[in-house]
Length: 295
Image 1: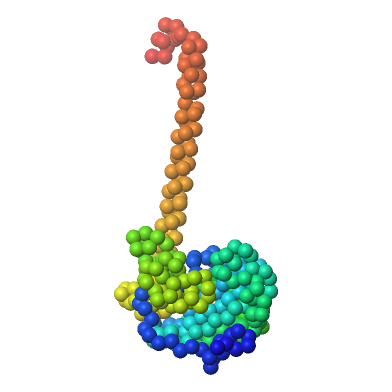
Image 2: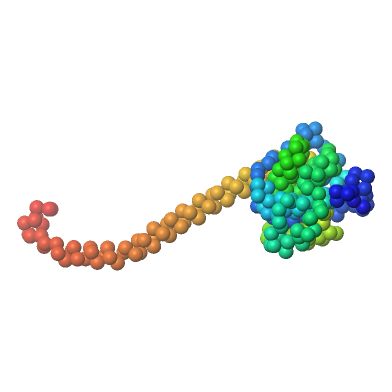
């Protein structure tokens, strides 16, 4: 049962039982940079098993908060490996939903006519997530929209610690041996999550929560148990990958330049040879006196 605005109230949040599988939306373009594990310094040394997580997912009318709006918000709260509460609401974006987005999510203008505005929804979401580490699959995308929504609602954005399951997966999954990519659907299928992503916010948040459990397990296998350990580990690996990619790009550019130079040489070769032969034929034959003098 939901409140009149379509938002699940704190008293109505559904309790969920059962361990989160140790086993999220597809990869989306990054919109804004953010510090992956910032927030309250007090939580940095708390083991992952002792933290609470608000796993969020949104559906939108486009890719940028500057020219698109949120159509749905879904979130699950995870404690000790269990989903203990859920929140979901359609959101009226104040603009029409493009046909391709309707085809992707199934969320139409008709469904959103009576939905609350993002200004009405955000206070409940921030209350729901209070005290949690924020989790999202490609968090740059979700956080950029939620920050903008908070501004629209006249609310200060809390300095959540943020963990991005895409970033974790890119360092913890073996591609292409285990998975071809790190999209939420791919990871959910690989780990056999109880709920598969459907491009609807609550289902995708549930799937992301399960994927998170699996990835935290892989971090533990590497001796990483806290945000304080995770942050430098991620930064070091990503810096090494960026350096390797830059070196590979430079080597490729050099190889292309050499190939172009060789091709140019081939194109000029026959003409140059012919010119040389013509010049040799036209040159005067040196006299004996000249030959003697050169010696």
